Image 1 (cartoon, rainbow, N blue to C red):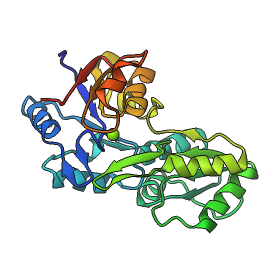
Image 2 (image 1 turned 180 degrees about the vertical axis):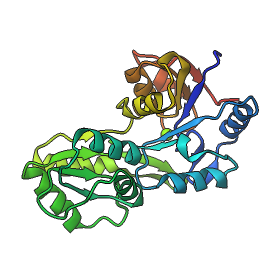
Image 3 (image 1 turned 90 degrees about the vertical axis):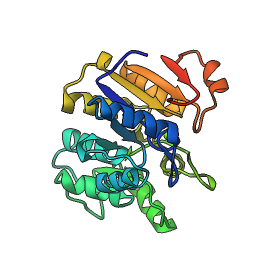
Length: 250
Ligand SMILES: [Mg+2]
């Protein structure tokens, strides 16, 4: 395999499954670090802050610098501060998106927003969904951190932010703008902030529709691993193929 400067790892189903680390990925990451290459982590999970994701990685034996951890929440906040400066923003979601918006200096409003941001809220109630649909119907630009309908856990699949964003979009008759993978936005931010060219980067993930398509949409190499959502068999039938298809990383 070619050597890259920026190895960008998906997290769920690639580096860990729930609270359990995936040994082959951890061994591969340690191997990179021993040769002086510090990987990047790119997750559609919008519920956690950079610090919380760093803790989750540390718990499975992976030390990661904060500046190498990118979530859809973090990149959504950067996208809003770049494209909607000074506009009124309302949100639903958890710590991850709330902290990211705060860190970008974005002030939140409760009513009549110009932009409505949706990340996953695991304490979701009907009123929160009702407020979201009203804001979007009234013309707020609808931005969702990610479009994942479901995500794998140690218990099975659970509903993801995409399931709720789709619900709001259906009611309001508006298609959300999604920032997470397969949009290339997260890889674009890594390339810009750390000064990489596309041929120096590789996207590694278990989910063809998000991880592999994110790399393909961005224009860098991709590695599919058979440790999570999309089985290798399904990937092999796709028209656009990843650069490498592996059972596991080592
Ligand atoms: Mg994954």
